[in-house]
Image (cartoon, rainbow, N blue to C red; front, side, top):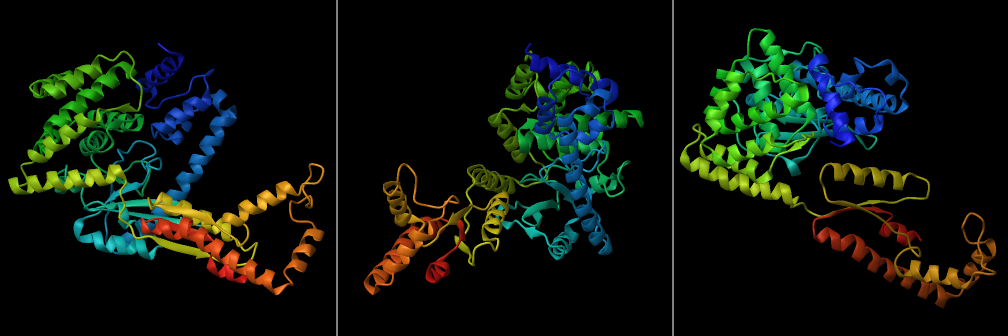
Length: 483
């Protein structure tokens, strides 16, 4: 077994004792922190039980400080959202949180919040009033993604769900709302019941992500242990919900996969043996699923994230659609076609967006470049095909190539005729001005610059917009005219 795998095994073996993965002394903290971050595991949880040696580790403390800042930024933004919703009588439920500390899921790509369908439009309007931008280019049915930007930086991403859905529904929505509960550690957060948290996190790992992270594992384990301490896990409820939406085999596979990972990493499993045997009997007739489970069980080393076979997860997904008893046969056929097309669109990153040019013009030192680059970064984060283009008369295109050639040919003694700052010397500028006093030279120079800029902008700006790209132009035709 490699040293990295041994490290992770030793870290995870302690989870059974403390509920949180500590970092033992003598290990490469940077590598461990990166591993936790790949698994979306919150360093704030580690910070509750820091060993004395770790408080002196600069790498860990730097990463922890960054996460704490991000946690507080997102939570403050979310507090404003919850306050605005409460004023309008809108309830919300944080669907992927299981209530383990911190229950506010700041390590997620976005905050997944469920609202009741009649409140969906009002909830989205409230976000717009708070300055959120709706990302309509990547929306899915019953799911609406909003981002809020401050100084070009995204400070909050809220994914508003009207249903727990990954193109098709998976849960008993009425029961989900009835069984909700407040999080023990955060008054802002309302979380699903332990059973619903298990269902949502396992379904998301299988049908949406196709991978099981440490964070998923810890949420499920927290829900299992918490429900067991409170009187027992309602396995019958979970089986009934999965069966009612056509994914009994998916639930059985994911619980058994979870058990296969949890037992060797923690030394024991929170899934009762009788329940393991029941799910094995349910899954064994499904040969493909049973083989996938045996392959997982036969692995000597289990690392996280655990990537699940893509085609196998898709097979489970379309079995779920075709056997969903809540939908008539015609609707199931429509769902198969629509989800297949939507999946192709998402995976191919096809975005049928109109092209556009956003131009920033003005004198030097006014912040054009900083604003342009921030705008490009924001658009790309929103999955808009965007590019940054800088141009200036006489400094781009053919003129730039000619200028470089002239500079190379006019080196004197191996040194360019220029000032230390890299700008042309005063003598050079004077010679240029004298040459441009001649009307024919000035006329020819102006037209050459104009044609050069037309070609440059045509190739780098206008042509890409025909293929749907948004081009952020740092200087544009008005600047060329001024030059």
